[in-house]
Image 1: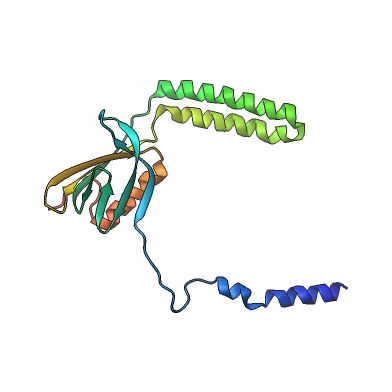
Image 2 (image 1 turned 45 degrees about the vertical axis):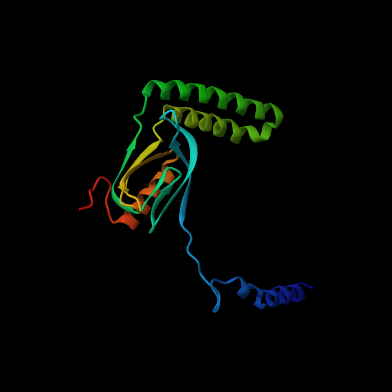
Amino acid sequence: MKKILTSLMMASMLLPSTVLASSIRPGSSFKTYPVLFEPAWCIGEEEEFDRECDIVINEDGVTTPDGHIIDVKQWIMTGEKYDIGKGIVGGAAGTAAGLGLGMATCGLMLPVCLFTLPAMTGLGAGVGGNAAGANSKFFTILGNDKDGNAIILEFKYRNPNFARKAMKELYRTTSLAMGQLKS
């Protein structure tokens, strides 16, 4: 019986169905899509970053709801200062909340307590410590629109991973380092 099952399993591995899941086949088209980063925050009517917006950075320039720059002259990224007081208070509150949540899981499922209690406590401390706002990255992009008018676009990312991707894409598409002025 083992020999029959083994031979059936080996034969099923040799079926061509796995070949159909390969990459691009002859005759198929490959499309490139613009790089879209989310969630970004744009300046609203009160001159504060209070509305979500889509930012597209590609070879055509930088597009936001506030405008489209086709010729980037300079781009700058700055970050918020880390507020130590908020970080300490947020870390303490997050640790307390995580500890309470971890203890609640201990009351429900005792064997899981060994894993959930330290994980929830650490997660709460990390999230609370980030309440100081050091993750937000502000972008200012200076350039010209299609009519040659000077435009300044401003937006921010709360996630540093999106900000890093936006920096790489800005460098790739404009060939300008951060702060470098195009001559």
